[in-house]
Length: 97
Image 1: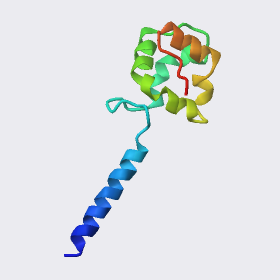
Image 2: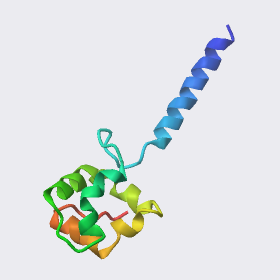
Image 3: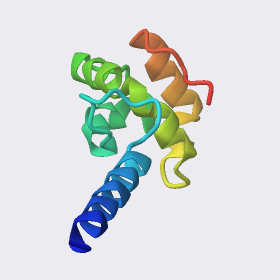
């Protein structure tokens, strides 16, 4: 039965690929999805104070902030002065990645 070892090898490769695709530093229960931070748009892009919904989402997405900070499309928001102000107001530590 030559197919049994081949099937095991394929399963191992698939598991390794799935593990490599998981964002490092993210809690397994946290789905890293930057769109979850849309309640923070007014605070990060504008100058309004963060809402309770924004703070709640920032706390949920905290394990993902380094992933966002490394993303060329998102890093300007995470590292912006307003982004840091929103994190401070919500008592979410600014990530040091």
